[in-house]
Length: 167
Length: 297
Ligand SMILES: Cc1cc2nc3c(=O)[nH]c(=O)nc-3n(C[C@H](O)[C@H](O)[C@H](O)COP(=O)(O)OP(=O)(O)OC[C@H]3O[C@@H](n4cnc5c(N)ncnc54)[C@H](O)[C@@H]3O)c2cc1C
Ligand code: FES
Ligand code: FES
Image (cartoon, rainbow over all chains, first blue to last red; front, side, top):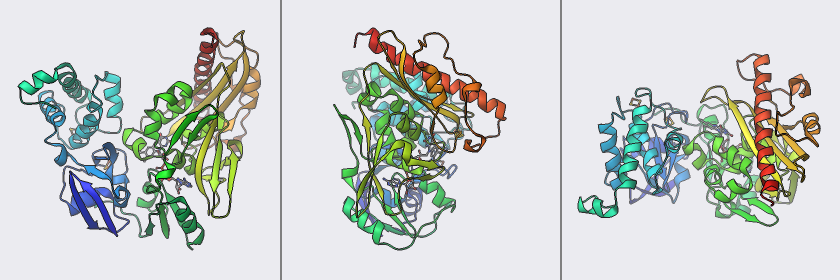
């Protein structure tokens, strides 16, 4: 069946079997291997992608459900200023160990930081409620997101532009 | 590749009429697909399989929320995540906000719909007890007719409700609250990832002396279907609940066959959890109700 959608900014058209899950189309048909399969039961969030700007679990969606929608994976978000800040902060604050959960964590926190105002720690924890990490114990992940949030919301736009990091 | 559903025919109508034609005319097992957050796990594990799935996500007219002087109106495709982030709902119906925010996690809420949560009727679903506590009316439509079902008549038991095989849930209507009314939803989770042990939704109205003039208390999750606890409601009438909330296990007149018991905790512990959940929900609804009186609203 014909599926038309926008994937990481490009219009795509592909013939898929209706029973195929979004995660399998992204990984197998488009080679987007940042989308990890952790549990395959909608529990862990390693397969999180953005659909029309909102995080969803791609293992729990039929690919056909994104008909006419916009899908973004970590690959497509890498040039976004917010994502760059998040990645740096995760590295600096040990927000990852094995890295398996990290693409999902980054996407969930990217969505949180998009709202353009500071988040408190409860909001940060709520934002990654659907993402399981088996290594870090979460504290360093919350710290990483906290620091990225501080950089984004406490630094003025002018300062960022001077550093060539304007949003 | 992990779990993949068994094959089915997929249809994606763009109008409600088209969907109603399909659901009435297709022969074989036909199922509506909304957010898929309950249905897809069943398909993947092959607990369920269908000849046809009718994906209603393309029917834009089913995704709305309207707040006006008569009440609140939800289209079935309105996402649980949209409810959780909607400040008008939070302000007017805190219990709906609390139930929506307690569903799963951000990602699942972004796909899951209010219509799907109600239609699925798992005892552990969080929206049904709130719907019942607010006296909602659910509109069902088939090719031939439309009917309005009052929430007490809607829920039959686990995964069973009033929706007929050729019907689609097309709207949920929540009447406006009386003045000085507070609402609340509380759920108790055993562990973070399990379905809740017990959940409670309350709607309490107080008079000018801060005494309860109307009480609706619904218990769910541990029961076959969300159920009003009339003995407890009667017990609360005419009382000022600023002190302790007088609810004890003696007031819990639930028959053994009404319990939906899926956890591994002991029955004694479950009863303690139930009483705790009920008290928290009643206390919180009462506090919200008296706020109205104290603010002179
Ligand atoms: C990991 C996980 C955790 C979860 N935790 C919770 C939780 O804590 N609380 C909770 O309440 N739920 C929870 N859920 C379930 C899920 O959030 C809800 O059941 C979901 O909101 C259902 O909505 P949906 O739109 O995804 O429905 P779907 O999965 O698309 O459909 C569910 C059922 O309803 C029928 N249906 C849907 N819409 C209509 C309609 N308009 N008319 C007629 N029939 C219809 C479908 O045919 C299907 O039988 C969880 C799910 C997962 C995977
Ligand atoms: S792989 Fe999708 S939630 Fe775990
Ligand atoms: S870093 Fe290993 S699972 Fe999170």
